[in-house]
Length: 125
Image (spheres, rainbow, N blue to C red):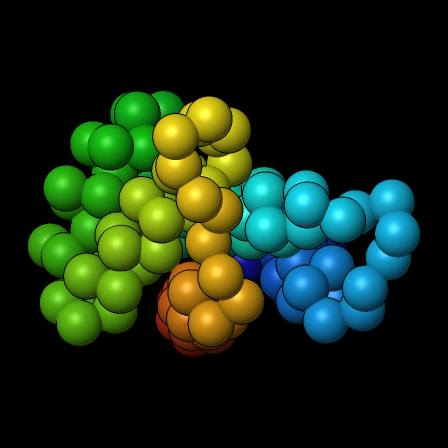
């Protein structure tokens, strides 16, 4: 992962955590989705760099297809965690009137998995 890409991904993860931990009046009721969007953006930056370094061209496929391929190119446990995080973050990004937003512990778990992927990608450069 290039330094700028790593910096951006880490910054987004840190911003996502900050949105969760620092209560702001203007984010009441929306902070879970705001945090999820930032986390998913970080994950997508890391995935793009991962595929560019590991299997060029796969980054052009849909994210769903990338998730299917991930265990073949990465540690199976990490791939499973990243896939779970991607699905959770993606669901949390979309507002559904019948659905509750994720709680802080769910978001923290997903963000930890995103951070692990960022670390994995850095090891491949």
